[in-house]
Image 1 (cartoon, rainbow, N blue to C red):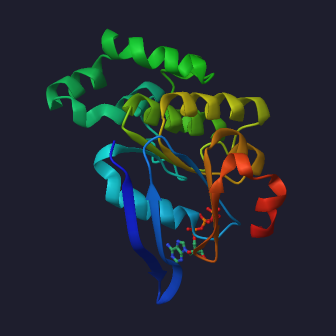
Image 2 (image 1 turned 90 degrees about the vertical axis):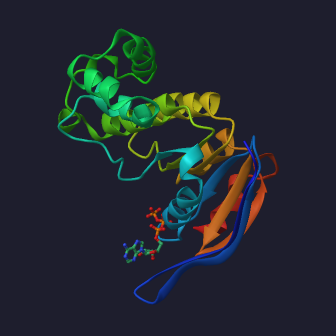
Length: 216
Ligand SMILES: Nc1ncnc2c1ncn2[C@@H]1O[C@H](COP(=O)(O)OP(=O)(O)OP(=O)(O)O)[C@@H](O)[C@H]1O
């Protein structure tokens, strides 16, 4: 994967500047943790980034973007819809194919939602929905991962399972996290956002929670 160079990014809502202008470079192999208080601009930055790398990134949006009436299997399968023909996609909608189940089932097992494979997403808990959205991004297997608060609905041990799995599957990622300890444990670089600007940018191993807390 080539480096990503974002230059002069900015965003405004109703004439009010909420992000930037800011520039950011992402090198292959970097796992960036986006931190900062609620409303700082993390989601806005992730969405602008996704607009620029759509063809090479898997996204776990904060709102998850799941189809409630479809099963967990089908939602996860959607991660690779554009890799297959319309005919093969239709076949999987009607009869999940053994080849896809062989990949998706172990993935769901590891995320602790194997038994929910056939359940419509509408019947899942918040944490199960969140893991379904993560599973879809893992199945997509793109060159890079963008995730917006992907473990906010999970308790301690499960949050570690999911963070560990994402870290193993994706060398290059940008993940917004409100949990500072998780951000320090699973990333190589911390980018702190404050009032729409980059207020901190440093290797994770050089930082402690006390360095990040002033952003909140
Ligand atoms: N659709 C919108 N319309 C108007 N203002 C918006 C909209 N989306 C975001 N904003 C504003 O833009 C700013 C940045 O929001 P953003 O969602 O990027 O923050 P965040 O750091 O991701 O917050 P959180 O951690 O709560 O998700 C906030 O002040 C927010 O109120």
